[in-house]
Amino acid sequence: MTEPQKSIAVCPGSYDPITNGHLDVIRRTAGLYDEVVVAVVNRSVRKSGALFSIDERMRFIEHAIAGLDRVRAEPFSTLVVEFARSVGAKAIVKGLRAISDFEYELEMNQLNRRQDPEIESVYLMASPQYSFLSSSGVKELATFGGRIDDLVPDEVARRLQEELRR
Image (tube, rainbow, N blue to C red; front, side, top):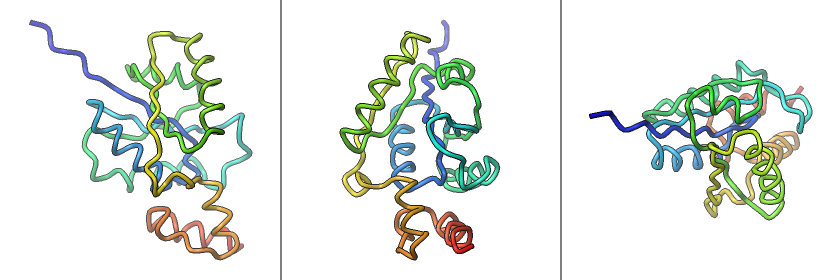
């Protein structure tokens, strides 16, 4: 008798920095799949340069997911469907906060399906307390001294405040 194939999902993003909203989607994804790979974009065409290096973003994520079984983080610099294929994933899971997210993700879904129709895009609606939360919003709040301690892991809040005070 053959063993059933493990269901693997990829949660891609720049995670610059990881937020509690990202962690909520990652935790919920872990409840749906046997294994979750948090795929950290090493370079992004869509966004300007990252505030934190890939090494520091990976460290933030590894600390934040330390208590989650079957969840790991890996950097990638290819198309997300290529990365998903390389780790054996059949799903790319993303969180959706607003209509603007949907429009962008619909376009990405169509492009990704052309690359590999076997890999599904799956969308989780943001939990209400995170529906407004974005990495760029957190960075803006931190730049002007706003309270971010309940939006990101503690280590991230400390580093953001250090980095943006300069």
